[in-house]
Image (cartoon, rainbow, N blue to C red; front, side):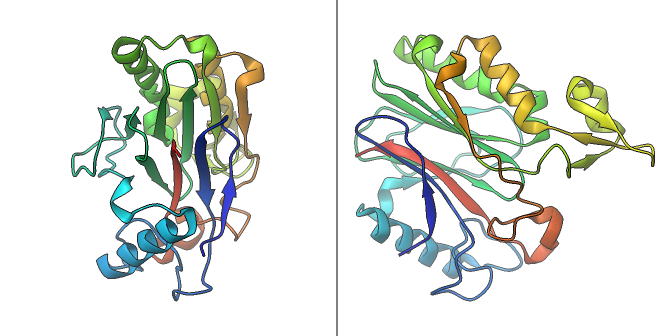
Length: 238
């Protein structure tokens, strides 16, 4: 079994975000991206354990190589392409994005039976990958943003996430100045405003207010550097 937070995204949908869990595997425990602290075998075993926990086949869990861009890929099976948002309408397929301070956004269109998992760090947020994903869902499936349910995972919080000029230049509306000449950046609020601008109803947006940097039950690259593992935010149809 793997520890994860269940996210209520509607009837017939399985969704959640994993936590730090070293009950079976050594540090970083269950981890879903190859890093200096978790080799390919370690990561594959993590996926197998998650599949066992969810009661699905390993090959039904689909992820991609994340590059902090805004590429959206529609999937029906396991893929190896580079993307930061995965969309599926295929029953039994679970799409997921890997996290360690970035925000994972889960979307569900209950009318057209389509879901998406989105990786939105500051670069993804600056490129408005959430809007790109919703536009894809509109074009491919006829999604009405007002019908979407959305969830934001825990991420580096607006009180802890210290950034420099590069982030301020593109996301200044969500930055607060610090005495050292840098800023803190509130990724949750930036994404929240982007979702509202796309037409998602406020009442259909939920979030985990936890801070990955200050709470050790989340993986955090900013806190643990190369030791950090990767969580998985995932969603699919049962």
